[in-house]
Length: 123
Image (cartoon, rainbow, N blue to C red; front, side):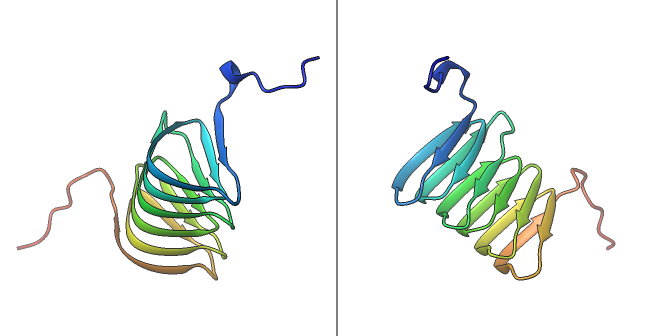
């Protein structure tokens, strides 16, 4: 049995603690971030993004679902669900179909959810 990762079958990304990344990233497959990232992240193929407790992202994220345990500052554009866990600290703009905030999470945001339909406002 081979004792290595077959890169052709890899369908995830992991950015480990201690790393600092800056730039524009197009990621495929479930992605876990325990590092510091500054820039833009675009999740391909409806993959989920998880910001671990030690992770921090500053910039813009376009994704389906995102789970935040660490810190985030910037703009989140989620076609699915944004979930903030008790250790999360989020500052910025959040656009999502669904937003879940667990007790203990710190949130300072401008945001809205979208039902996918235009809402008629009374005149």
